[in-house]
Amino acid sequence: PARACLQLWVTRPRPRRDTMTSTGSQATDPSQRRPARSHGFVPLALITLGIVFLLGNYLPEPARGGLVVLGLGVAFLIGRLITGRYGQAVPAGLLIAIGTYLSLHDMRSLQGIQGPAWFFVLLGLGFLLVYGIGLRPSAVWPLFPAAILLALGLVLFGFASLGALASLSWI
Image (cartoon, rainbow, N blue to C red; front, side, top):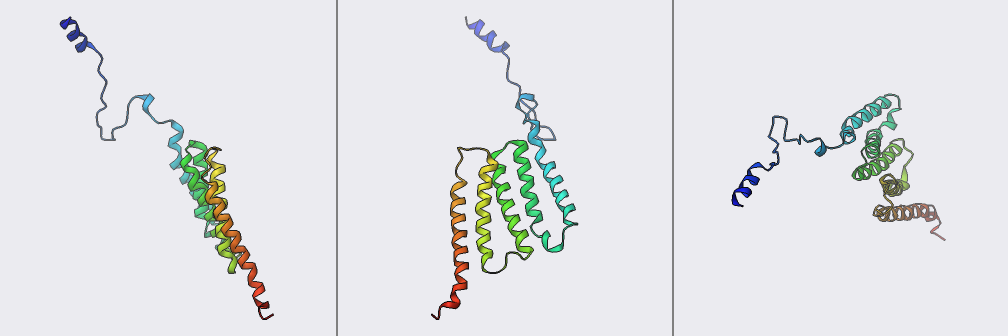
C-alpha cells in the first residue's frame, strides 16, 4: 500500500505554473483571460475624445468649456454599455452633469444668483443619470444624493426668487 501511494503521488498531474515573461505575468489559460469586450474601453475613450476635440473646432469659443468634461462622460457612458461594468456609470453620470453645467455657464446663460442653484440641480440629475445608466434597480444609493442635491437646488432657486421681493422691504 505504501508503494501504491508513492506511485500515485509521483504520477499525479501537477498544476502548471505560469512563468514570468518580459511582458508580465498574464495567465496563458484562455479560460482565465478577461473577456474581449472589456479591452475596448481605452480605445473607445480616445476615439470619443477625438470626436469631442473635432466638434470643438466647429463650436463658438464660449461653448467649448465643458465639452471635454461632457465628452469624457459620454466615453464612460459608452464604456458602461459596452463592458457592462457598473463602476463606469458613476463617472458617466457625474461628468455629464458637470460638463452640462460648465457648458451652460460658459455660454453665459447661468449668470446671477441662480448659477449655484443650477449646479446643484444638474448634479442631482447626474446622480439620477447614474441610477438610469447603472441598470440595476436594486442599487438605489444614487437616489439619496440625487434627492438631497435636487432639494438643495430648489431651495436655492427659492432664495433667488426672493431677491425680487427685497425691493419691497420698505413696506
